Amino acid sequence: MRVSLMPGQHWSGNALLSPGFGVFRGAIGDSALHAHYAHQLVISLHGEIGVAFPTGPLRAPGIAIPAGLPHCVCADEALLVYLDPLTPEGTALFQAPADTPALLADDLCSQLLAAADTGQPLRSVLRQAFGLSRPSAQDARMTAVAGALRAGIAEGGASRLQLAELAHLSPDRFSHWFVEQTGLPLRSYRKWLRLELALHRLAQRGNLTDAAHAAGFADSAHLSRTFREMFGLNPAALLRGIVLDSSFVQAT
Image 1 (cartoon, rainbow, N blue to C red):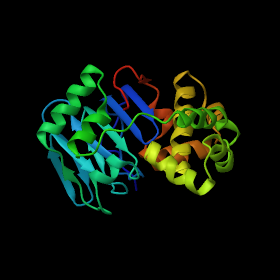
Image 2: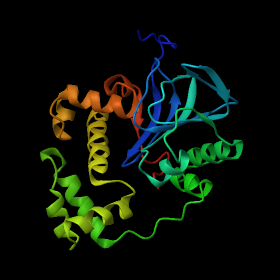
Image 3: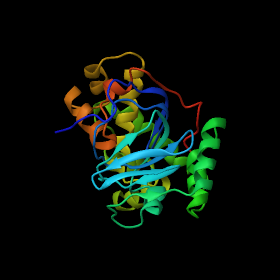
């Protein structure tokens, strides 16, 4: 049975979604014990934050939750960062399959909060903290590939062969090159793109069915299921009081 630990509250605040990376800052709404595909960083805006796990509660200024671990964030407000486990940042956060949370260093929490407050790139803060190199300048071919992916997302998107031709690479070499460019396999990148497009449609006060079809999902149930699997939340309930706003924080 799923029992809400924070009854009667609604999500409100600012959010950003890009391939492999999501951010939310604001008031935490209804939350039950749940698990999801993305790694999650939970950072208190004021002092410490509580997160409930099957093994018991944990309190700290910041907590990292590995993908698949059931949890419930118990707080009025927080900064939440979602990382695809296949991204370089996600791999560095939990370098092996993990089933226990980790406490974040106070300095890292402060740096992430400061970056969110000033509209700075959170992923750069994480890369520096994890000792990852700065991403190289984007290959001009990637601009064409990304444009083709976005343009055809509602119809299922361009095939791997078509994208490889755009990049002037063989299909096998393209798969490796795409991960080098984006940090994600093509299939995962498409999923994030579809969720991003669907959320922007919902943010424009569209309904779930229209948003699902515009983003290439079979129907609203498919969209809702995919969103819950990724983030553990219902997209319709989440967006009632949330503004999708790339200006409050940068993705890269």
